[in-house]
Image 1 (cartoon, rainbow, N blue to C red):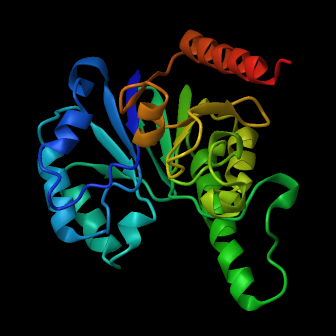
Image 2: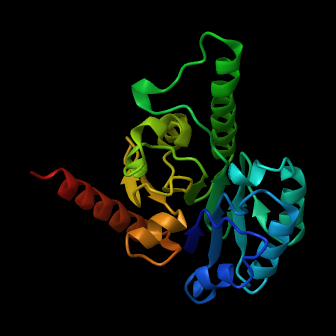
Length: 256
């Protein structure tokens, strides 16, 4: 199974033609198009209309998670309805099965990473903030527990690990993702994870449990000399090779 993954399209009302160019070649090379959030720029209906028209030029199955920008105009339910009616599978703490590959998806949220993850303690406002991540992680945990298939892919908008944020200002890390999701993915032994959101981050790294994570923000992909979308092949040998390649790249970065 070949998955073309891209995030941060940020489609605007005047983006006609641009999205088609960004996605050039996906029909030929991929079996699924996976959209990792911030599909629109301001969450406007007119932006979604442009996006759906652009995506209509590509016939492969499409799966999406939403991003923070898609929430901006408080029309997220309408936008999801538009996507669903156009044939896009929108995942929000849910899953889908395409051939032998199960895909779980959620927007994700903030909170930070590892020992520095913000705790739900003190003011109610802070508790509510962090409980958003806790609740989303619980939903994706349940979705994975119910997904029985040979291969499992996790899609998010926010980051599940800090390593793919390298390049962003460190002060922003708690607002760019949460390691609660990586904990869930490691516990369920997911095969590969994609996210976006961190425009200035790094293209790939591993969870503490050794799962490949790809930052498929189009800005990251292009900055590292890649095309705007990331092609991932999901198969036993392909996944082993992918993990080995990321491990080797990580060692190179830490070599004296």
